[in-house]
Length: 131
Image (cartoon, rainbow, N blue to C red; front, side):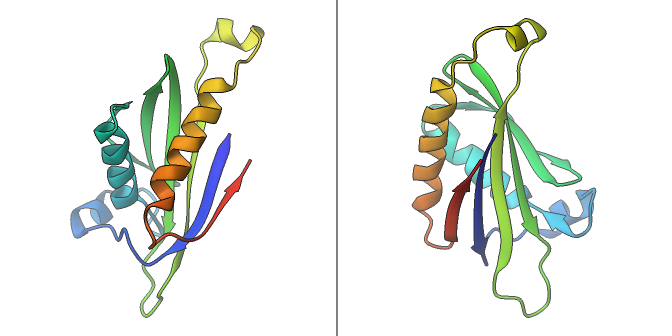
């Protein structure tokens, strides 16, 4: 799994997205929508984001492999300038793939692509890559 951590004052969920949240304290729909759109514009196949208890998820099809991408932002607290957030992804595997040698080349390329997309947004401060 690959995780990008950051602070931001952007990507605030609208009222409709807030009503669909599973966890009132965590958002991420605006972030997931922006990121899936940015990937799609670059020719990567993505699904529409959906809400989860940790924020929002969507699937990425990249180099013949499927990845689950999760996006999360702390809720908008009154007066707060920045909120902590993350984007992470992991490859989804079919049962027979668990026993095969794991080729991480697609994961490394996707990580580099996401790093490039995220780095283009100056609103994402203190961007860090974790494992």
